[in-house]
Length: 382
Image 1 (tube, rainbow, N blue to C red):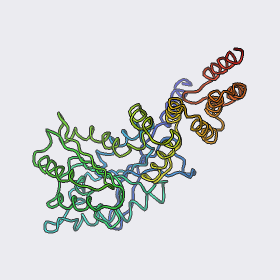
Image 2 (tube, rainbow, N blue to C red; image 1 turned 90 degrees about the vertical axis):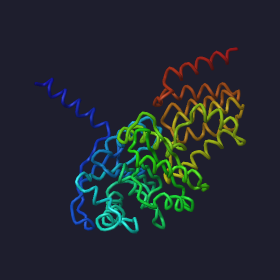
Image 3 (cartoon, one colour; image 1 turned 180 degrees about the vertical axis):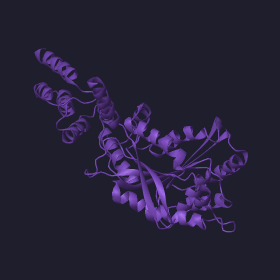
């Protein structure tokens, strides 16, 4: 029996390490009913921290929430995208009414207008009051809901910065309205749309036509991406579109990879450290939140400093790492590396030795520090 209890406890603890869905209800005055919500918070979410997270609103949450939540949790784990807060709205019994638009104006009307106001006036304030959500908001929909999400673009100040429209069932005139709005939009906006070769024929034809028009938009504030998947249906394209959309929306946020290193950092007119500073400043500007310095990017910039023989950049990087990670071996490693490149081997050895008392990082551990110590000691003897 004790083994059973221990197994249950370990299972519970391991599950708690992963993002889980929270089920909530919200009483809506706009809709005059109770709405069911699914909410997913980031792993290790702490409401007391002074940190905010992008908010992802998932329409058709009955079936679209889980694939969206899984993709975000997975990509955030590998630091390809930031941690996000998700809220899905269950609409299995009400979606036809929720997404209703007038047959003359083709804008939300009756129950559709009520749902439009519910999301803007009740759901978003509810999430902001109860969770640490930022002003960078993403909305995602499929089919009818992928059409409906476009209406939030037409507010004077759009509620969302990123739109994911998966096989939208476009309303009449939506193509022209999207073209006009996205052509003149004044804040950085990400728009993603997808269809597939086996999509519903009527939807696919309208989407292909819409894409041809949107591709002609010349607006530096708009980042537009489109996918036409092969061997995918109206439903299976969802599983392929979500990761592609997230990849495009958070392209700037991603860790430095080999392509960026070779094509952008090494060819950058300024110093490697200036590139790093600009990259993180741009992330804060575009997404509205600060990204914590990650070890992958430190390694890339340090390598570029070596490649360009830029000792000044390496020193600035080492001081930044020391400030950001004072209790990590990272701080001693990079300060030691700077002194080593400078030719001050005694100072470098001191820094490496001090790292033995600090915490290991993802790539820098005791073995790495010891190896640097031995190499430096050998260099001092010669």
